[in-house]
Amino acid sequence: MDLKVLVSFLNDFASLSLAESWDNVGLLVEPSPPHVVNTLFLTNDLTEEVMEEALQKKADLVLSYHPPIFKPLKRITWQTWKERLVIRALENRVGIYSPHTAYDAAPHGVNTWLAKGLGACTTVPLHSSATSNYPTKGGHRIEFSSHSAENLETVLSRLRETPGVSLVATLPARVDGEEQTRVSLNCTQHALLQVVALLSQNTPLYEKTEIMSLQKPLLADTGMGRLCTLKESVAVSVLIERMKSHLRLPHVRLAIGAGKSLESEVKVVALCAGSGTSVLQGTEADLYLTGEMSHHDVLDAVAKGITVILCEHSNSERGFLLELQMLLATHLENKIQVIVSERDRDPLQVA
Ligand SMILES: [Zn+2]
Image (tube, rainbow, N blue to C red; front, side, top):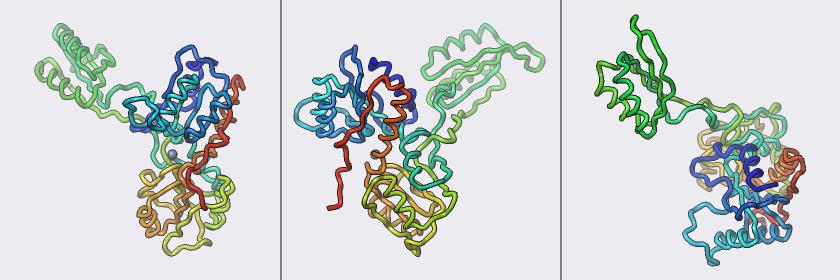
């Protein structure tokens, strides 16, 4: 399968517009075209050890959940491991694609997979994503009426030249018994001031100007983190065993909430794969489940009576790759081989 076709399939599988604005997602390293992908290699983290495995297994594209390139690279030398990854990839004609927070937000993504370990429950995102295909550029809608066709043409041509303005419609309208033209446009915050200034210069001609703030509708099942309400509440100790089995881990780290014990009942769990503090903060729940939190953030949660389970950053994400392997293989009708790294692992272990 051609790389371009595969990348557009991957972008459809989970839209990159769901990713956080600070993130660095999508195709990060591209060998010169045409590039045919027979083997897609999945990993949570692309370390040099994992890259070696990908080359041994003749991968044509590596899908690395975490972006191996995040900060801009000013040079590509043999000095640092990130630069060496890019060199190894290009010299061996291997592409690198990273979905990261787009998979966190997706309804069939990492957080939904993590929630499956809790047992039967209903889940909603802690922070819902806004829909991306809402037909608007900019955050404001301006509507006004004009009764001077000649002057309107001049104003419209000025508006068309203003950056951040997109005209939506010019329609005939009857205002107070008079034939007028009703104009609708969308614009950015910055352009809003310019549009208002332009209209006020021509005041008597423009009437019934309305300015509306546009908000994109939120998606019900897409977004960061998940708030999970268990169908039947269970003891903390039971939940620990469920998560260990779901994550295939011998240990998790546990902080019991103030006044609680291993026997305390858990009904509501707030979870976030990876590093959850910013997403979980302020959420009311019996238990927080995430990969990592700082000492002081754990103390804050515990003081509120919230029990915290930490399973190390990538251990809260990696298991999704096996589900992803099946999803991609099915959706791609087994046209390419999809394999999961065997060497990818969390760098921390209990010694
Ligand atoms: Zn992560």
